[in-house]
Image (cartoon, rainbow, N blue to C red):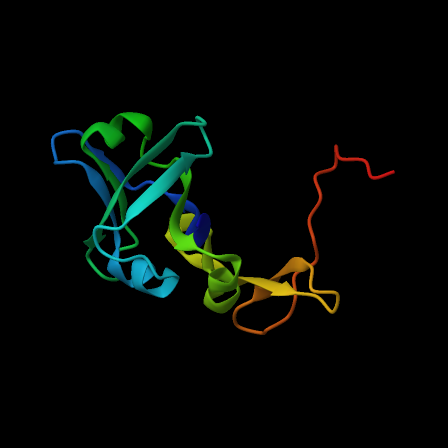
Length: 153
């Protein structure tokens, strides 16, 4: 069995940190439901500002609040305004991921969702694994992005 991305919130901004609340991350319930994050599900959190990486579990916050609050020990890893990536994982086979098509919400200012994509893993005509990123609303395929410093010979 392998571990795969199940759902992801990319670039959501931390709205608060509460050291004295028992551990977890509180996230707007509407955002969790749309991405496919379940209550008490363990997630990985990567702080884009500091590089800190932690794992904790999800608590649903007020729907529509756009909140993202780190609680307990996790509160020491982020400050309000930091951009984080939150990803959940699932275990299974590649065929499970092919069937699941993980959803990704991408955030702009004020934790507004600015893009929705789906990771589409598939087998090509030769049976090799491949993937594409699909715009959730239009079904259009996103062009691949390659960092400027990578040179392909």
